[in-house]
Image 1 (tube, rainbow, N blue to C red):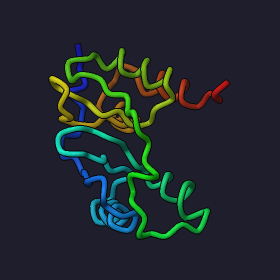
Image 2: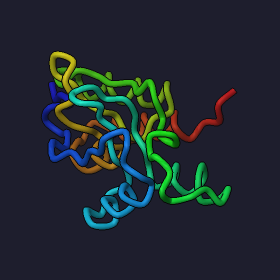
Image 3: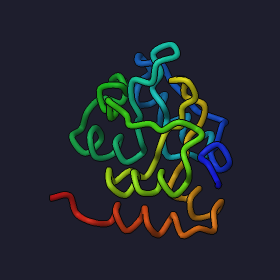
Image 4: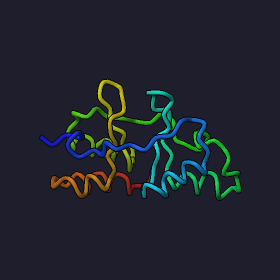
Length: 138
């Protein structure tokens, strides 16, 4: 059984809750990534994506000096590292998630994206997740 541990990216990019939109966007640019985890110590308090910055802040003319945590998605759903890829794909589809932080004993140890499902598995899990993500929310 392939688990999230087998396909996750463990090189995480994080920022503290006080980081600004500009600082987070700069991290994304420098590391060629589309999301940053907002960590309050060892606690995952949110995730912010490049799309969040554009749609929730820039589109409304908000200051890039604003706290990124104000625009991040809180209450982030996570799964344990030993979860099967198939179970994770089902959850990603059901919850319409493109990115899934991975935990071990409650501590964030990695992240799995829809792209990871597509490139690091051969089970069709990416298609399953994408199908769910592509459906409109009722």
